[in-house]
Amino acid sequence: MAKILAVDDSRTVRNMMSSMLRKIGHEVITAEDGEDGIEKLREHPDVKILIADINMPKMNGFEMLQAMQAYRMLTDIRTIFVTTEPTPEFIDKIMKQGAFAWIMKPFKQSDLNTVIDQALELDSDS
Image (cartoon, rainbow, N blue to C red; front, side):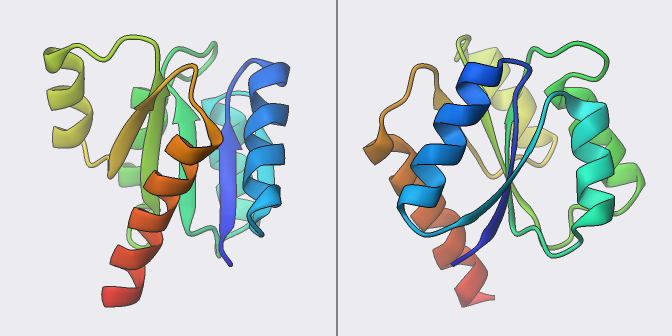
């Protein structure tokens, strides 16, 4: 399975995502904000999927994605955003910035499984 980085400023959400992802066989690393997430990506260059909240302190999800682009970390990483604000403008913005997909909070195990499977399918097609 894949190595996945889960980034959210809520410990509860991080633990929930980690538990859901481990349940389906993935290795999970967690980070509490975008700055911590960038550091974890440097420590774990084999991360295949990033799941990140948008609204976080220090460095939000958009800023994290921009930093990943600046550091050329996006080459092999599928980025999935989690949000409570899925407006058309928001969706357009994250997709233009290079996100692979998004899911709405709160999400179910099946929602997470679907988007992870899609990201891994795309990865295996490359």
